[in-house]
Image (cartoon, rainbow, N blue to C red):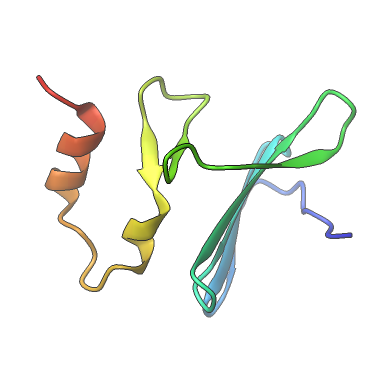
Length: 91
């Protein structure tokens, strides 16, 4: 069983990083195997793995915001303005 730190912040080791937000959610990014894991605290106090929908992780905090995990492995990284246009959708 994995233990998730409840300390808010970004923690990293070379190709591995995890982001903890107020102990309610943890994002684990493993560059060595190109995998993103999103964990959210459920009503019973246990972290549950959240699966992407159509390859996208959708924010519960910012309405309409999503992230395509495959962008993290692209070299060079995708253009920031283009990514923001995709997330925003048609004007």
